[in-house]
Length: 299
Image 1 (spheres, helix red, strand yellow):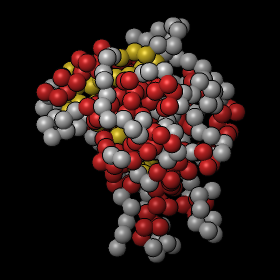
Image 2: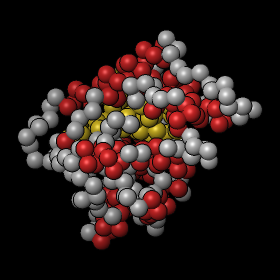
Image 3: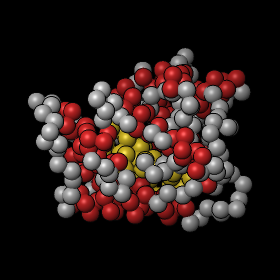
Image 4: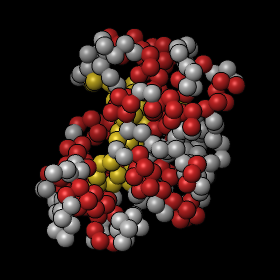
């Protein structure tokens, strides 16, 4: 019998220390960011016992829709070698950023867990930086870094997707946390479904009612894109919003400890179907039958 383990994995993650340690690092660094400053990337490294956390944050900014997007091909045109890994023809990265040159020896020699985390646009940078690390590290000797993002917009284009697809094992290093009430993860979604590139990694999709994990790119894309047009209308300056994942995760963690999870729908006799429907009910907080029409598509 085949089941989807999205609910079980979500509960495991909710009670895991790295998830909450990552958010605590973001919350601490957020206090140092000047909300009135020009858009700036803030980077901080926190050392704990057997743990290194590298945090990426950006100053609050106003960014709507796909304004300001940069294609991966632009990096090559403008001779920016630090992002050569976005090219499908890339064979070697030549690091020059101070963070890159100092972090690589530290991580390659470390026996502790390394977490790369970021919030909102900082999550995009954290994802790119983690990809650079994975491409640069000797993974036979160094531990793989773990990238945990919060409220990160979906990123990537065709070239980016082709690059990542060549290293499918890397996807296990990425955990993206997003709430269905948070408009920022939907920021760069195109209104044209054929133009959307599938995301990668594990997504922990949350709401006040519950949460579930998903790894199927097409399903993730459809869930994140739900009601995206309404969000962009309601939040025209979506880039300046701050969604407090700390309180949400603590509430869901308490539910996980209390085993306050949805029961499988008894009316569905196909285990995989019943499990998926239950996951949708968990994150959307409505009776399971409202999520599926007669063709079993998401509504």
